[in-house]
Length: 468
Image 1: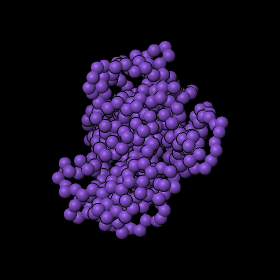
Image 2 (image 1 turned 180 degrees about the vertical axis):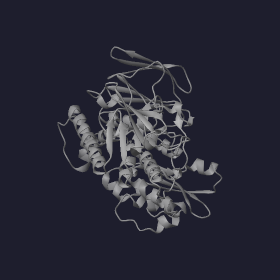
Image 3 (image 1 turned 90 degrees about the vertical axis):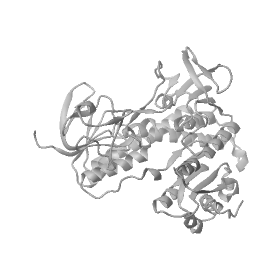
Image 4 (image 1 turned 60 degrees about the horizontal axis):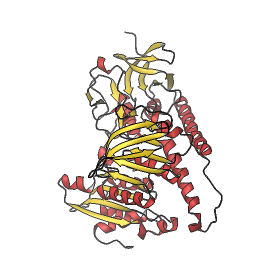
């Protein structure tokens, strides 16, 4: 076999792949990225994190306009220009995608357009849009192929009625009504977007709580907030049939108790999870081990196939989060470069949901901490006692700290309320540095800020919160 041309070939340019490529370039590795789509950035940038958060910000602004009188402003005659909202979203995405292209060039990373797959030891096949194939050689290969939205059996997404996270971002207008199947992060975020833009939103969730991965008290608080806002949420709901009509959709579903019901809406968003893109990439010709379609790796992201790594959404037991894929990419290529690297501590990964109110968490929930055998002490502080929240006119929610009773170790931090997706970083750093509840108490937080609520929650662990 001819000597390998590249030190590392990365299949996929999402937040895992492109970050891995940039770090590989910084480490002096001859690197190539293979991307099947015309634009770099993957699901997160084009049909995930970035466009949804752009729409969420616009929905927040619209909400402020509607409630301007509370802040001393008369705001009359305004309306949503949906085409302009969509254009702004696309502008943000395009700008960031071009930024990735620039950063790859800056770090001397080559890019090849086409569908990449393993062709044998040290070889990657690339099929372009015309069906023409080429083969490249690399000493190491990183699989960063991401995931796709799951679809319920018998359904196919379209441009206007049956939607996934892709199609819903291209709607030509705000639908009058929408039913969302699934109350995980995707479902509740789109509920927050379209409800604030005027859609009548109904969510059907088969589990007992919304955002079921969060601490139960956080879930209950979101459920209360949605009820107050007018978002209809049915828990313990079993969807039995979805029928596409000429002008909408009918959903047959059964509540936890009672008789089967029908629900009519203009659109239906399927938000029931994601599947790893591990099909047709040549894994069957390797020693790579799979678990329910996800790739098994060790602490350095190595698969069972020599010199083949995997990162991001395709990794077994790894959260499907953009920032996790990026961190895994850095670990993988640093290991490839022969440099010292630290495996990821998956107990310290922040999870953020950009609903109204926002949700953020890190570490163990209260129930999980108790199940693990810890003697737990909990502190909670509501934003109703925070001066900056009062200034913002947004005092919904609270911060909850789960700690070890004996030593004050921070086991988990859970937040719901204003800007908590930013506030959670302090908790992540505290856990990373093994800070105690007492450390959080004694760290002086500036006033007036939302961050004071973190310190207050730490005081509350010992029943000593000041402003409540």
